[in-house]
Length: 125
Image (cartoon, rainbow, N blue to C red):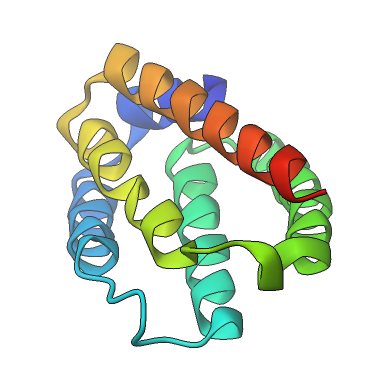
């Protein structure tokens, strides 16, 4: 949530354009279209784009390390998750909030996304 808030206040015009393009990409995901490894790479790309948008290399580095740990958890249960594409498409409104500079909304959407991820992972563990 802190990174999303920070990204919304720090994203450059170029980064805002990249965030909007990624929002369009994830919004149009087809649950039956991409294989799970492709979807997981896309999810990692979304997260790393948000981290980069913070403009803080130290924060970006720390968050990439945490994301790597979360991805390891995903790998344990990815075959048990029913709709990975929908989980990833949840990022579209978040990416748009960051691109719009709406820090509070970005923070709220991130908290909701994390809570949903946590609930889903616990359900299948």
